[in-house]
Structures are given as C-alpha cells and as structure tokens.
Image (cartoon, rainbow, N blue to C red; front, top):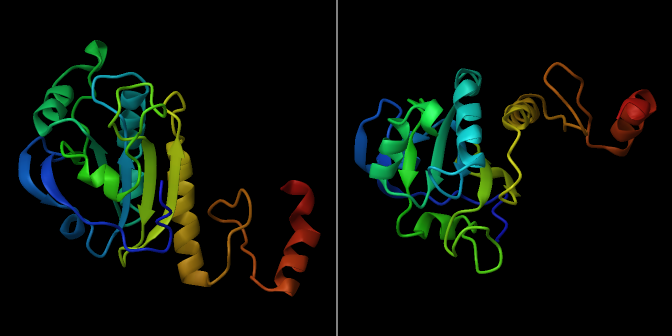
Amino acid sequence: MGLLIGKKAPSFNCNAVLGDGAIEESFCFEDFSRDKYAVLFFYPLDFTFVCPSEILAFANRYEAISARNAVVVGASIDSHHTHRAWRETSLADGGIGSVPFPLVADLTREISLAYGVLSEEGESYYPQGVAMRATFIIDTKGIVRHQLVNDEPLGRNIDEVIRVLDALQFFEENGQVCPAGWTSGQTGMSNTPSGVASYLSEHAEKL
C-alpha cells in the first residue's frame, strides 16, 4: 500500500448509486467533492458481514459529517446494480436500506489500485482483488490528510472519522496541532518546544 498523505487524491469517474437511489453512469469524484472535505471509504464486498455495519454507522452519522462541510463516498468492487440491490434489501434480510451517500462501482479495480488498497493473495479473507477496509479524509484542496486500513475482521470506528475531521479543521483554523486523544472543544498545542512543554506540563497525566 502506498502512502498518499500530503498528495493529491486520485480522482475517478465511474458508475455509482447516489444517495437518492438513482444510478449515475459517470460519477465524478472530483466534481462531487469540490470545495468540500471528503470521506472516501473502501470496503470488500456488498452482502457481507462487517461491511453493512460500517455503512450504517456512516449513514447514522451522515448529518454530523455533512455539518462539517464534508461529503461521504463508499466504494467496493461490486457493480452499481449490486449496490442498488443491497440498498433495496431490508436490514432484516442483510441489506443496508436507503443510505444517503453514493456507493461507487470499482469493477475494474482501478480506483482501489490508485488508492493502494487492492488486496493481494494472502492478504484477504475474500478472493484476490477486493478493496481492503480503508478510509481516506481529503481536504478542500483535494489533498489526502488521513488514511487508515483495517484488516477485514476489524470494523472501523466512524466517530474517529468525525474526530479527525474536527482536528483537521481546528488545525487549519487555529494553526495549533492536536495532541493524542484531542476532541473538539479541547485546547491544542503550539508546535514549538515551548508549546509542547507548556501542554505536557498541564495535560501529561490525562493523556
């Protein structure tokens, strides 16, 4: 997996199912996320096990993420038809219902390859060639500022996505860095020797 932090996020055009259930045959990620923060998450396959719990967790926090001027986009190697079928399947039957964000179809694996998250033999519980459980946060200039990859049995904490968005926006607005465990409303740290010393003298035991 390549490190994309600090680099321009790869854009892509592909088929997608939008948040209203419509199929878009030329979904452009760059246009969709223009002038906004973007949370792009990959998952292995539709109609599986950990994946729907994560997608529903994103859906349940969609308003909170949107309030931070951010869009959400999910991606897997499934077709847009499979995505829509999954949306139209009830939760009781293993579906995800009408989630409010696009699910893009990476049938060619080109998007997963561009983001460095396509599994190789021996790295996946599923057959070779599925997207790993990866999350990227991209700033309003299209630069990747956060990336995280979990092994497939390990579901993501979507509250951490919101915390990282808050931390990124705090840093951009205040110029202060965010120490371990920082959450919105807490003080930041000046990235100087004196700033570190001042912060640690007050907060070290709470870290």
